Amino acid sequence: MSAPDAPRQRILDVALEGLAEHGYEGLSLQQVADRVGLHKSSLFHHFRSKEELAREVYRGLTERLYKRLEPILAESPPRFESMLAALDASVDHFAAEPASGRLLMRLMVTSRNAAPGESPFAAAPGQTDTIDELLALVGRWLARARAAGVIRHVPVRHTVLNLMGLVLFYPAVVHHIPPAALRADPRSPEMLASRKRELRELLRGALAPR
Image (cartoon, rainbow, N blue to C red):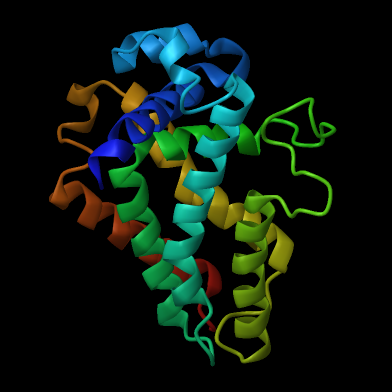
């Protein structure tokens, strides 16, 4: 990353943490400025408003996840191993970006039906919501895999939601669990490997042909 981009990226990182913890209404530009170490007025050199900042955070986190998963799930013909690889990639993604998991979980349980201008997370006219694009990506893989006999004949929409729950819930809540209860750093290689094994076994039990 070039030096001129560093302050902007730092602002985005801090705003992501704030949105994940406090939501849009609970985030203030003053909080972001204080944590970044800038005067509030300096933020406006990078973002014109809190809404623009939040929208950029949202766009960035969903695009990064989509770009990680799309090459795996676009494979043709579909293989069961592709979905397992996508789960592994998701675990690694949210281990590297824990705040992204928390914010996505917050957005998944918050109404996104607001009119443009009422929410920074509402899609603009003629645009597709990026979360919807993620859900559609997984849904297309499930439909193709079901038609090819790679997975059982499961309901696609319900399965997409179940998968999102499996992927998002853990990174969204694990930072609230006392370390003593986990007995290990949830982002350690050992814990990540264990989580991948657990998710793979759950998916095999739920989707693999009998």
